[in-house]
Amino acid sequence: MTTTNDIAAKIAETHDLSRAQAKSLVEAVFAAVTTAATAGEETSIPGFGKFKVKHTPEREARNPATGATIKVAAAKKLTFTPAKALKDTLNK
Image 1 (cartoon, rainbow, N blue to C red):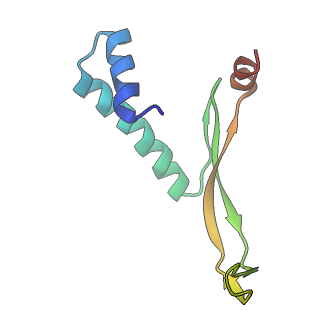
Image 2: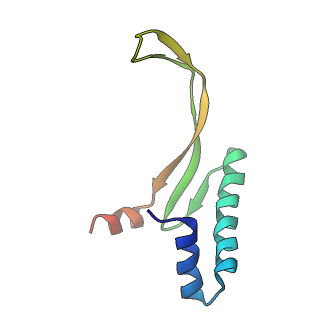
């Protein structure tokens, strides 16, 4: 698993920054994606992919333990669609 600290360490090493500076950059990118998502906007990072908000409608589900039918409330979820360049890199 790669963590925020791992990403920041790689950026710091590659771009001759302190780890604190690199971590603040990584956190700023995640904050920008979060802000866009809460506003219902799509975030596109060329060569990497798109983050967008999808709405899931209310639905009925079944409790597997009891078999009882329950209602699952409508919700929003953040989805990621990888760019073609990323998919091609993964499938080499």
